Amino acid sequence: KNQVEQSPQSLIILEGKNCTLQCNYTVSPFSNLRWYKQDTGRGPVSLTIMTFSENTKSNGRYTATLDADTKQSSLHITASQLSDSASYICVVSDNQGGKLIFGQGTELSVKP
Amino acid sequence: DVKVTQSSRYLVKRTGEKVFLECVQDMDHENMFWYRQDPGLGLRLIYFSYDVKMKEKGDIPEGYSVSREKKERFSLILESASTNQTSMYLCASSTRPLNTGELFFGEGSRLTVL
Image (cartoon, rainbow over all chains, first blue to last red; front, side, top):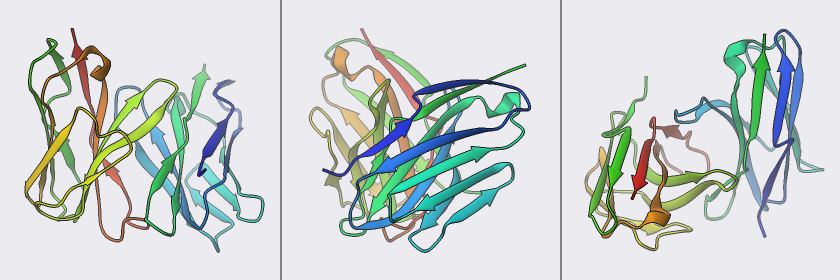
């Protein structure tokens, strides 16, 4: 069964610190992996999209990595800010029906 | 900038009422989607449409129907709302093909059914 598992479920860090969020998937055949940021009460916004051949992709202070062999991805946030407090959702797309499989998200809270 | 607009941010309805959730996108995208989001369950696909008047069931279509009469507009209909349909509803649009087109979401419609 195609699944996307994210860890941790929630995370609290102090402003200015770095953190890493994890995403493991069993989706096959793989097409691409996306990370979204969802502020409370708002719709998700795309951070990165990575295909099979991409190992790393950055968007400002956000850096996503992909290991297609182990089917793992991580999202690293550098020098966190209060505005980084949000839910981060990992989404994997298959290469057959084009289905998007969503992880349950990691709830990040950045404290001053 | 792509804009996906959902007509209502917050709705409160009574059990048995018919509910319409409207979504409009301004980027001429072929694909449009309706998801519901519940705590601990993530986003689940209700219906999607890849062209005008075309629709496909997602993972949880029961109790819902959709309408796409114009390319820019995708409506979600709850024929007879029930309390278990209390949720956050998210509309999204993307270009083709389905598996590579970037997905743009609306701000969401939080529905409470009493």
